[in-house]
Image (tube, rainbow, N blue to C red; front, side, top):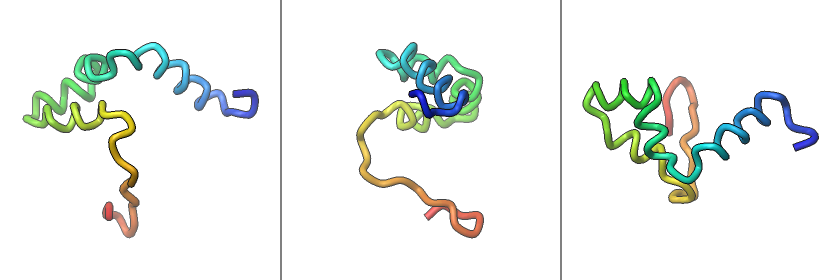
Length: 65
């Protein structure tokens, strides 16, 4: 982490704190509560999945593809 930006180092440290129960941490955070309140609890659960996909969405011309 010597060459990481302060923001990247903070992200790594934050993840380390919640990694063992990421789903609970995401459900408890403001954005997670907002998504759940809007009727999207599955999105929070999907966000908590680790190493479940070999692909990532790419934003192109304002759309994910």
